[in-house]
Structures are given as structure tokens and as C-alpha cells.
View: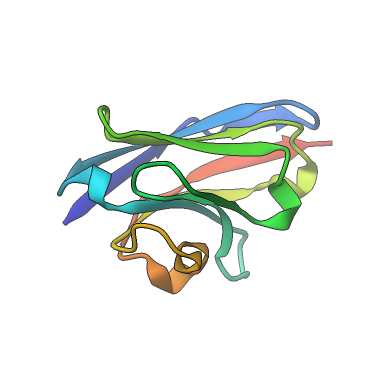
Length: 126
């Protein structure tokens, strides 16, 4: 079992930045691939970014490439999402997730994850 707790969400103006953090506890964090997803009310959860178990591989959805950066610290059991140049369309609830898949394109799919955090709201005003 892995418990995940997100933090760092909030309200920011377009063009601004936010840094989301996810703290993990439970089983060995370093053995899991980690991802960030987002979801708007009434819509399906969508992939944002993922990172392999040792951090050597990262994956991004096209709409955030060049603006968002995912990173992890296996010594601290945390995974972060640095979000720059935010746009109103980035407004969503953001979720951290843990996958038993260590590295693979499967990290880009919701069904690849076994554990989820409770989510943190990100609101970007125009």
C-alpha cells in the first residue's frame, strides 16, 4: 500500500508558476513509477507527466511540454511538478499517482496506476 498526499495547488494568474509536490508513504517509493494527472468536472482524468522509478525517463503530454517539469527525490519520497507559463486551460484538479511499472509508455495511462492521492486544485485566471 502507498499513501500519496499532494500539496502546492492554488490560484495563479496566467503566465505564472506553481510547484506541486506529492509526498509518499508506505511501500518503497523508489520502486514505483510516478505520475501526475488532472481532471475537470465531468471530464475524464488525463495524463500530464510521469517519471520512471530512478528518474531517468520522463514523459509529458504535448500540451505541457516545455512548460512543466516533473522530478523526484527518492531520498525524500517525493515527486514534484513544476508548472511554468500557466494557462487558463491548465485549471483542473491535479492528482499524484504511483505505478508498479518502473518505466514504460504505460506510465502515460490512467490504468497503469494503482495508487492515487486526493488531488489538489489548480486555478489559472486570465
